[in-house]
Image (cartoon, rainbow, N blue to C red; front, side, top):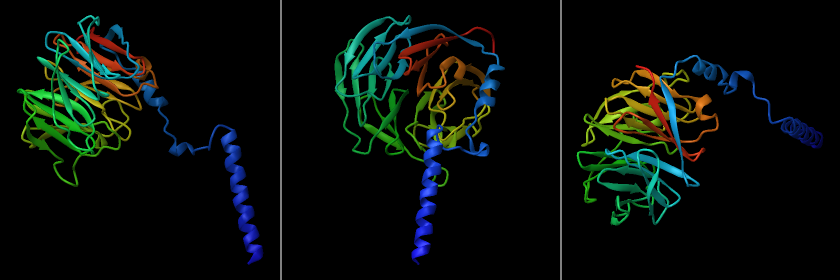
Length: 315
C-alpha cells in the first residue's frame, strides 16, 4: 500500500509539472478539433459586399454607454453612467438627464422610458422626472424596452419574462416561454425585444432565434438558426439586440463574432452591415437603433461612440 501511495504522488507531481510547463508556454494546448477557430469565418466576411457604409461616428462623453433609442423626429437617446443623453440627428448633445441609478435599457416616444435593474423610470425630453414605476422584485434584471400601441414592454432576463405595462405604469400582463421544452434560454443577459405593426419580436438567444408574440403573449412565427455561417447566429447566445426598420426588415447584432446584419421581413439573411473587421474582434455588446431615414445607429460600448451606417447601394 505504501508503494502504491508513492506512485500516486509521483503521478500527480508529473501531471502538475506538465500543466505548469504548458501555462508557461502560453496556456494548455487544445487539440485542433476543439479549437474555436474563426479565421475561415472572418475571411468569409471579407468576401461579402457591404451595402452599408459608416457615414459618421459620434463620440460619447460616457465611460460605459449601455443602450440607444431613436425618437420619430430624429432625436437620439443614449443611456449610461447614471445619465441619459439626448442628442440631435447629427449627434450633438442637447440635454443631459441625471438618473438615480445605472440604466440598462431605454425606449423613447413623447417621453423617455429608462429601464433600471428592477424598474422603469419616466422622464420628459426636457429632463424632468415624471414617474417611477414599482419594482419588479429582487430577481428582476431588465435588458430591453419596446413600445407598441402605447403600451411598454420590458424584457426581464432575471425572471425570463416580458412585462406589459400601460403608459401609466399599470401592469397589463406578461409573456412567458411558449413551453418548458421549447422556451426561453439565456446563458447570458442577451434578452432584447422590439415592436412593429405585427406585434413583438423577442430574442431567444440561447436557441439562436427571434420569436414573434402578440401583445397578449401568443407565439407566432419565428426565424433564425444556429450556425457560424453569415446567415446564422453563432455561439451560446446570439443575437444580442434587435430593431425593426421602417420597411419591416430587421437589424440584429451579435457578440463573439461581432456582427451587425439585416434580415428581410421573413427572417432570411439580406446583408452584412459591419463585421469583425469593421467593428473590431474585441467589440462587446452592440445595441442598435434605426431612425426614420433608415440609418442604422450602432452603440459601440468599447469605442464609446454611436456609429452611423447608411445604405450606399440597393439591396
